[in-house]
Image (tube, rainbow, N blue to C red; front, side, top):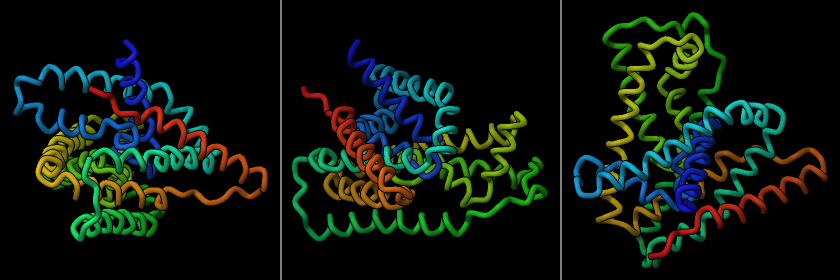
Length: 279
């Protein structure tokens, strides 16, 4: 029961992360110590019949927590991001920063070499590139450009956008919302959600499902054959994400002090949530 509750709570954290702009659900899965298990369950769900029931149980518990968090806490996060944006992001920064030592210890052989340095830098540069690009793409949408018209091209575009968006849910440090902005469909999807347009959401959903499975499969293979380099790549993504979501410094001395306290509390919490099971 305790393990089920912990997994459910971790699913809630991943779910909340997915509704915060710039925060990656994949990063939070790494922070919480469930990333390898998640990649294994998704990547090998169809290929490993013997463990399929175990995979399904794990994904259902995690997914239930994520869905409950999104449905129950979206309005809370909207309030926090509107009125306490800096402190909300500082809390997630603390969660991420506090998990870095445990991520480093996940693999027994993390001795630096040329390949590990390159993969770490590649991960960090990748996040830096997406961060700079996302800032340049942030601009008000023209209402005349966001009406969805069903054509073969618009359907394929949404499936492709969903594919990369699903992949970004698996790759730490890359925001799902950003991928939709990058491909020019974010406003179309937001309007579709508000007006309950089924067609664009269905095409996007197909792409997301394919992207989650495909990216998980690739990362699972990399973890099996190049575990150290893959973990250093993930570390690069995670470390760089600290800078990509940094919201700035509070305006007052008391605000700075509160921000520091929030970061330290979140860092301590990440040690508890990210504790790896033994045995």
